[in-house]
Structure formats: C-alpha cells, structure tokens
Length: 138
Image (cartoon, rainbow, N blue to C red; front, side, top):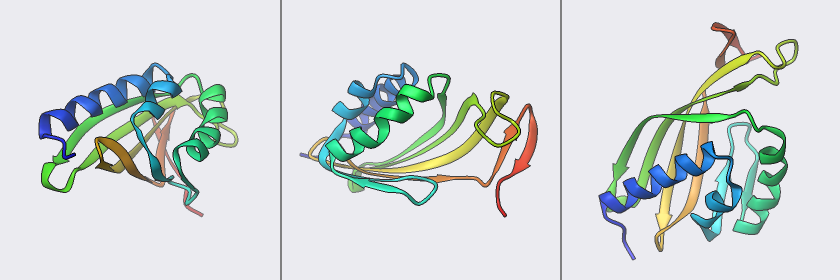
C-alpha cells in the first residue's frame, strides 16, 4: 500500500502533534511492527515493541520537550520524508541542567504498508543553551 503525498503529510502532522502531546501510544500507533530506529547517539532499536520499551523511560522522564517542525520534504515515490526539526526542552547537559536548550536535527523516515518502518535521526553537535551555542563534540 503506497501512501499519497497528502497521506504522508497528514501522518507527519499527526506524528509531530503526538510527540508534542507526549503521547507515546499515538506515536507507536504510527510505527510498523518491523520498525527500525537509529538515534543521534548511534543507539538503535528494531521492532515496535522493542522501540516502545526503549522510549517509555524517555517519555516518562522528559516531559518538557517540544519538537518544532522546520519543514517536511516528502518523496512520495520513495515513501520517504525528511523531517527537519528543532527540539526545545530543559537541558540535561552537564553543568546546564534545566536551562532552555535548542537542538537541531533531521529525521529520515521511510514508510511501508502505511506505517513508519524506519526512522534514522541525525543531530547537530552544537546546541543552544540559554541562547548561546555550546559545542558537544570532544
């Protein structure tokens, strides 16, 4: 089942709204059973239930997060989206805990059978804390 560009856009709007409501059940509803997730630190999870177990503590412990969509680039014939976003939340970085943090990134999201089957996340190594750039690279 291939999605139309409008279908993909509607799913991505639902997706970003679910994230920002911190609604793990809604987010997980959009994933394929065989989903693969790779995060910006190199960690990964394969399978919808494995991913739910991995994300449950994150959702429970990071209630202040908001993903702000900068743009969706939809590639209908490849059933793929490039989601450019920034994450706004209370920082967890050493020495900056609780200060406002802004982190920019991109997800490459691929669909299969109308569900997200792959989500690969990339993030900049420079973030903003209290409006000032902070380099995370060693």
